[in-house]
Image (cartoon, rainbow over all chains, first blue to last red; front, side):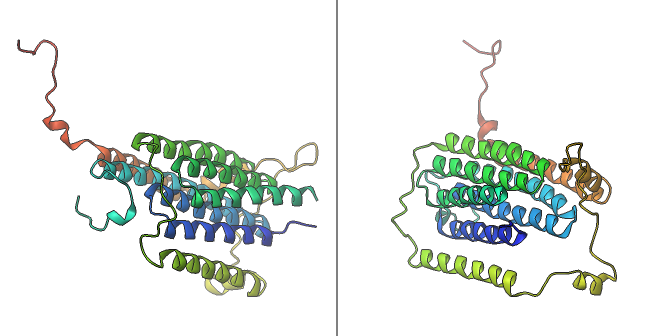
Length: 101
Length: 200
C-alpha cells in the first residue's frame, strides 16, 4: 500500500485540530504556546507533503520560514510569560484580562 | 511497504505526543511529549526525502525551542501542576472540542470533496503556472535520491533573498524585544556595593 500525500494531509489535519483544542482548553500560557507549536508543525507536514506531490521546492522553503517565525514567537512569548510571573504568583491565562500591569 | 510501516509508527508518535501535550497536568511532561511529537515529525520528513528539514526540525524544534520551554518551566518553579478536573468557565471545554471537531471536518471536507488540484487557479490569476522550481533531488551513485540542501539553499538565496533579510530583521527584533521585556526595572533602585566606595 502506497503512502500518498493524502495520508500526510489527514495526519496534518488531526494534529492541527489537537493543537487547536489544546490552545482553547488549557489555561497555562506555556502549554498554550506548546499547542501553537503543534499547529505550526502540522502546517509544516502538509507543506512538505505538497512539495513532494507538486514537485516544487517552494513548499520546503516555506517550512524554513515557518521555523524561523516559530523560534521568534517562542522567544517573545516566553519572555512575556517571565515578565508576567514576576508580578503574579500564579500563571493562568484567565487572570490576564487587562493590559495593565 | 516499509514506508507505510514507518508512516504509521511515526504518525502514532506524532499524535500521541500531541495528546500528551494537551492532557498532561505537569508542564515538564507536556514539554517531553512535545519532543516526542517533534521527533515523529522529523521522521516523517526523512521518509519524504526532506533530509535537511528533518535535521533542522530536530536541532531547532526538539533542541532549542523545547529546551527554552524547559528552561522557563524550571525558572518559574516546577511544582505548578494544573488540576484538569476543574473547569473554570462553564462550557468552555465542550465548546473548544466542538470547534476542534468542526475545524477537522472542514479541513477533511476540503481535502476529500474538492476536485483534483491543478494550476488552473494560478493560471487564471497570474497567466502562468504556479511552478516555481522543480524538486529534482540529485541521484547519488547508489541510485538513491540525495539531500535537498543544495536545492533549498538555491531557492532561499535567489528567489527569497528579500524574505531571508526580513527574517534576519525579525530575529533581531525578537531578541531585542525579549531583552526589553524581561529587563528588571527595579535595577535602578539597587544600591551597588562596590568595593572601594564602601563607607565604614
